[in-house]
Length: 384
Image 1 (tube, rainbow, N blue to C red):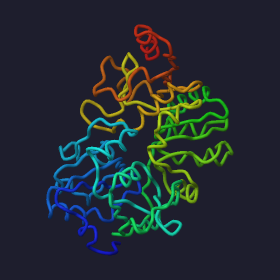
Image 2 (cartoon, rainbow, N blue to C red):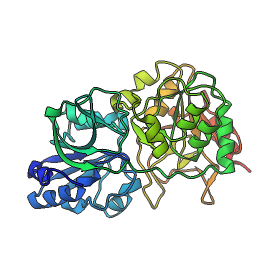
Image 3 (cartoon, rainbow, N blue to C red):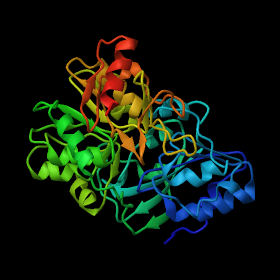
């Protein structure tokens, strides 16, 4: 239910750039009003981030230009229709864009009351960078979001309240791990020592890994999945996790409430910080080629996602002494091999940022191998 009706419209000016906060707690309550105001004044540019679920009230055609660094998920239809453009951007580079060519005049964000001011709820992401770049903050106050922001509250004087949302953030409905995912997770777990600092991507492999670990680990990841609560419940989580998005459901949101978990991407995706000590990154792929180059963005016919933090975490892990950049992927997906001679889309993560590839059939340690040796190791791994 909106409060202060008309306030978001009063903030929209011709030719301005508006950034809309992302994640499962995105400020959807004012999307329709924002779209109408943009169409009415004209020339408004829209900047979006990770949109995990479609927002039917956000009319892309109402804006002069729509850009995102993370296509796919809820933006898939807009991308397919040519209404949303997606330059290739790794998540760690987004703050620089927001201080440069993407500098926003207005940030529409979901906030929660905190310490006499306001804080972010289920995601921080790049939003503090937008504020530091000079954006005015238009807030939708979320009554159902957890308070998991590790940063200082925003002063009330910097925030214009334009709406209210009583519903909790959306839910990431994952796919239950199949036997091949469980086998991959078992192989990955054998490489993780007690006390490791670990990043996992969302999906059934990461879920199976966190649920199957038998040693204590620290979690340092972009997205924090619901399965971290099972890890904590078994006494195997060291300290508070580090993340920038919560990606789960009610159990995760309740567990995260009151914990200083969420940090800006300038911190979570900082390669220097990540690689300063042993760091293990576990990510997957849409496909991988015989050189070890990874595509996470889609197939030849459809955009499925963006570069996101995949390249950041892989690069940090390869630089980390005692760390590992692991690509964990099933040998086949939808009946097709995931190892290809040529990627169907541009490279998301380069081969030099991949240490070990693990499948349901085994693993290939690519560290120190020449190009021909890498070809042989990967083709052997995928051979029947």
